[in-house]
Length: 272
Image (cartoon, rainbow, N blue to C red):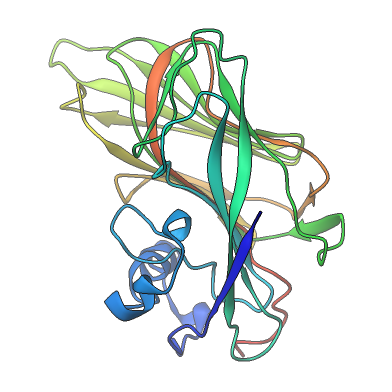
């Protein structure tokens, strides 16, 4: 059975249009999080690995799906948190825990939990969208996906998120004569694709932070909070909440520690 907790967030007085494109997402990840007192009132499934509450983007009606795997290990399911801002100027956040995503095709009975999902080349995670208050389909010009993961030292593709209207994956190639690797992040928003490549070092056993975002019609990627590539303008795209969302998987072994999928609601001119 799911439980609901409503938290009145800090009033972050933002005028989003005045911030640099990349700076918005650093701000969202840090400045608007509550302190220890607020974190103590938020369900464990809704906390980031930093211990701070996950908060949707600062728009009325924004929502976020959070997977932190900080639960008792299971071979059949993982817990997911669902954070939703209300449609008022206060933008209070309701946290809903007790929800589950299925662990599918787990032929080796890998246990998911204790803070991580160790994909073995067979299983993946399937999450339904469970918000009866939101219409089935919305169009977005802003959408954000964050993942923290470790990948093996191998030439391979790794799917982070797959959905009929959205897909994000990364690929590694290398090493070169200096021991560096190319990492390519590919995002699809609707039928529009952005693919960018960056050179990285210190590849083995390095927990990395990957972010794919579309912000007011411009898409780009961050790896370890550094922007890669120039980004490109994209049109709005349609997202259907009735479709399943697939997390992780692929044909190779890798580890996912945290995933946040975070589109806004309908903001309009609320920050003008």
